Length: 430
Image (tube, rainbow, N blue to C red; front, side, top):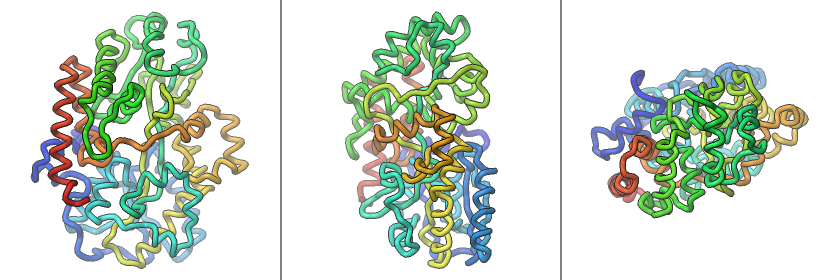
């Protein structure tokens, strides 16, 4: 895994072959019984999203103080969401299962589809957890059939980050672009303002979630990755968005790399699309005034990030303890603590009404941008988040587009591959 990108191993799913699939989320054989584990120790597998290990430890200490009979063991389960999914997949074959595990927007569904995550509704009801206080859009991202399979935890949306000094130098208003057509109108002025050796915009490459950010661009052009389970990469509007992305690259407006937030913070890019979870780091590292704005377009921002789920095959007693900790981890007080430390969004409606959060948002208007944008978000297209390897497959294709390959041909290939994965792995299980 050390030689792979953040989510690179999911690209192994592209061929839909049995051998490649062994590395994908939810494809391991389910453990037949509760393997190991302790009734009073809650093993929590996390990748510590947003460099959150210290705040996770802080929340765990508070939980143990309130529940002296329970101990939480925080396990470093991987550097990113995909490595956590790979570790869980391996445990399902025969290892010791965790009690609670971080599952991302692109990994939870296949575990749920293969009955490897426990439906949470009855568990939450038994624990008297008020699920109505979770932000509806975030809670329902984990709904499949008639149940929910995770609780929202480290939830994010992309934001439009911009360098206010360069914006002023380019003669632009202090705001983000209304849509991608307006950004194109601004691009010449931005290129002149940033100067030689720098770029008007930087974007993550296809191995580092470009497919997440590009979802916004596709929607702004009226396209989609899919309609329900039918791939729509060859839709003229989707192709138009791909051509727009390619033109940005050809015209020297955008540069693609693994860590655009680092270049942006160093003043090497006028703007980036990046997760709200990067807000804390960018705010700390940038030596200029950072602006944040909604993504370009209207009501077309994708949700993202991760929740926490419970393996289906652990004992009822372990499930009950896991729910108790999951509720504590994501309650109003702790979601405020977590989000202020990382930049992720509060997952509880009541969180934004706390005095602590109100004071924080007043002092940090950039953090408020994400909360204000939340009512304008959309759940992502199935072809990215519900098909095995979907995000990695799309990301690889977008790299090809950025490098100048024919958009229509690349997207036609995506349609074909996505349909094959659905037919071979999903269709019979729905």
